[in-house]
Image (cartoon, rainbow, N blue to C red; front, side, top):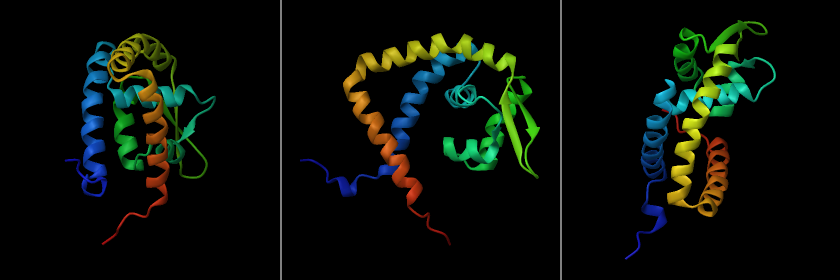
Length: 148
């Protein structure tokens, strides 16, 4: 018997999937001294031609600002990113030359994880799921969070 979709917790199911896949990628990226989250943040900064305001990066990566700052702290400590003053009281972050080199070092390990995942899951299935997950992010952004 199939469980009705309405009774399957979306948050719990997505968290289990995220933890499972992050384990694979973290194992590969550890060889370059990075976690999946750190690699994702570095690549997001690499795509930008200029420093990113923390508020924009937080929104793009679906982070609370304080959580983003905590995630960036080890990258700053290791000299992979640097913070600068933005407009007003805001802060901006940018990739350093050392960060660019670390991405280059990590990318083959990321590619190994990606290839292993795609070999098991299937490219077509992933293309479909990736689009659906993008839609989930957009839906979740539109829904208000309950407050006390």
